[in-house]
Amino acid sequence: MKLRHSIQTAVTGLTTHKSRSALTILGVVIGITSIILVMSLGQGAQDLILSQVNGLGATTIAVIPGKISNGPSSAAQTLSDSLKEKDLTALEVKANVPYAKNIMPMVMSGGNAVYGNQIYQVSIYGGGTLMSSIFNISVGEGSFFTDDDVLSKESVVVIGYKVKTKLFDGDEAVGQKIRIKNNTFKVIGVLPQKGQSGLINFDDAVLMPYTTAQQYVLGIKYFNRIIVEADTEEHINPTAADITNTIRNSHNITDPANDDFSVETSADIATTLNTVTSALTAFLAAVAAISLVVGGIGIMNIMLVSVTERTREIGLRKALGACDHDILTQFLLEAVMLTGLGGIIGILLGGLLSYIISIILTSVLALNWTFIFPWSAAILGIVVASLVGLVFGIYPANQASKKSPMEALRYE
Image 1 (cartoon, rainbow, N blue to C red):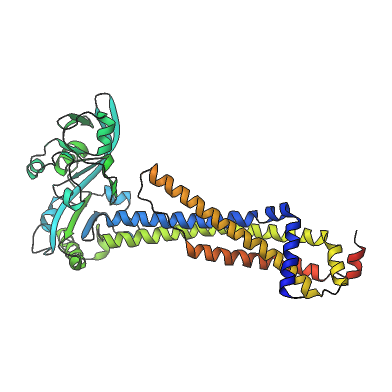
Image 2: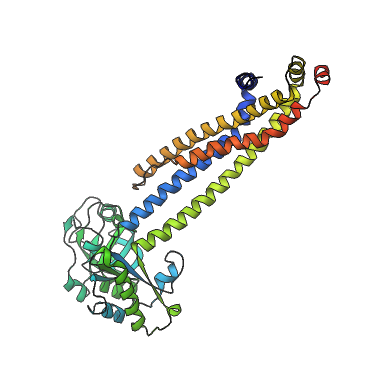
C-alpha cells in the first residue's frame, strides 16, 4: 500500500471517532501549552530583569557589604555593616580609584509614610545628590536636595509620583511635611511618573540624604551600598579592581577568601540573573514536559482500545491483501497525527495565553513586559510531540499488525 493510501486510511480512522481523538490528544495539548507558556514568560521575565539591571547604567559599579556569594545579593549582605565611612573616604582618594567619575553611598529601608490620616508603605533610599545622574531621574515639582542638605542632615525628602498620589490625593505636596518612623520630613520635590528604573521603583520611593536616613530613619553608621560610576565603559574592569584593592587595604585583608564585601558591575549582575532565570525556566519547562509523558501513555492506552474495537476491520483489510507492514504503518500514522495535531494546538494556545498575560502585566501592573514567542520551543514541541506519538504508538500498532485475519474476522 502506498503511503498516501495509508495516510488517508489513518485520517478516516481518526475522524470516525472525533470525541475519542480529541480526548486522546488532551494530555499532549496541555503539555505543549505549558512548555510554550513557561518558556515565553521565562524569556519575558529575563528581558525585563536584564533591562532593569541595564537601567543602572553600563558604567555603574556597586560595592556590596557582606561576604562574596555565588548568587545574587542576599538580605544578609544588605544588612552587613562592613562598609563604613573610612571605606568611602578611601574610595574618594583619586589615586586609589583614578577612573572613578562619581562615588555615592546609599542606605535602604522600608516603612510607612504618613500625612494626616493617609498611610502608604514606601521604599526609602538615602543617597547623595548624584542619585539624579546615576539613576537618570529628575524632579518634576520642587527641587532635589543639595550637598549642604547631605552635610547638615536636613530632614528633607523627594517623593515618588505614586507616593504623592496616595498621600496627597492630587493636592500640592511640595512644602508639606510627612512622618516616617516618628520623624517629620519636609517634602521639597516630587518625581514624575517613572516606574521601574534599574532595580528601584521610583514611583513608590522616598529619597533623602543618606546622612538623614542614617540618623533619623535607620540609626546606623554604615552603608548598604557604595555606588561608583566609572568614567568610560573601557575602564569598568580596572575600576572594579581598584575598588577591590582599596577596600581590602581599608579592611586590612590580605587573603581574598576573607573578603567581607563584593564588587559587582552591571554586567556581573546581568550574567548572574540571566543564569538564575534560565535555570528556573528550564526546570519549569522540564516539569511541564512530564505531562507529555502522561499524554503519551494515554495515547497508548486509547490506541490499544482502538485496536481491539477495530479487530474486524483489521481482519477485513488483511483478507483483502493488506500486509502486516500496512497495518503497522496505519496505526503508527494515527498516533503520530494525534500527537502532532495536539502539538500544533498546544503551540497556538500557549502563544495566545502568553500574549494575553503579557498584555495584563503591561497594562495592569505597569511592567515594561515584552511578549516573546519561543520559536525554538515551538519547533522542539512539534518534534517531541511527534516522537511521543511514534514511541507510544509502536506497541499498539505492532499488536494490530500481528492479528490473524481469520481470527480477526471471527471476532465479535
